[in-house]
Image (cartoon, rainbow, N blue to C red):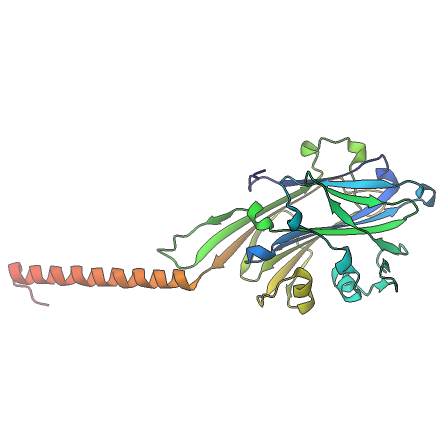
Length: 304
C-alpha cells in the first residue's frame, strides 16, 4: 500500500472487547530516522494496567493496524531486549527493578507493582496483536518496525550542479485513533493516560516545524543506545521528546504529531562534481574573455 507522505500515517489501536473503561494505558512511541536508511524504525510500547482486581478473570487482545504493509523481517518483538536491567533503565529513564527470572519489573513512577514483559505478534494482514492474559494485572508490550524511511518522502530543494549540499525536507505525520479516520466501534478504541513520544534525528538535521511543543531535547551519545538500535554508526543523534499526560479521570482519545525537518547532506561525488562544474565554467569564461580581447584588439586596436 502506497502512502501519501503529506497525509497522516494513521495508526489504529483498539481492543477486541468492551474493557476500555476498565484499564489504564500508557503509550510509548519512538521514531528513529538517521541518515542511514537501514537503521530507521518506529517503535511502539504499551503499558496496560487493569483498574480493578475483580476484572482479572478476563483475557483480551489489543490490535494495532498500520496504513502500510509490514514484512515479517521488518518486525521485531522487543521483549527479549528488555530482559536486561540496563536496557530497561535506559528505556524508562529511571532505576527499574527486574526480577530474578527476568519476566517482571517494577517502576517507581507508576507504582503499579509487578509489570509483566509480554510478547507481541504480527499477523498475515500486517496487524499487530498484544494478548493480555487473565489474572495478569500489569503488562508491557514493545515492538519495532524497521525500514520506515521508505514511508517518508525526501524533497530535494537544491540542484547539486549549483550547490554540492543537498537540502531535503522530511515530513512526518503520525495519528493515533483519529476520529475522522477511525471506523471501529468507539467504545473499543484504547484510551491513554499518557503518550510519550521520542523523535531521534541525525544531529545535522534541523527540526523546523512541529505541531506539539517539545518537552525536552538532548544529544544522544550513549553506546548502549547504539547497541539497542543495532547501529554501529558513530554519528551523533538528537532526541526530541513530546509528552502528553492527563491527570484525574480524563483520557487521551486520539493523538496527532506533525514534524518537518531540514537536512543538509553532501558526498565526495557531489563535491567533485561541483568542483568540476566550477572549473569548467572558469575555463569557458576565460576562453570567452580571451576571444573578446582578440576581437577588440583586431578591429578596434584596443589593448589590454
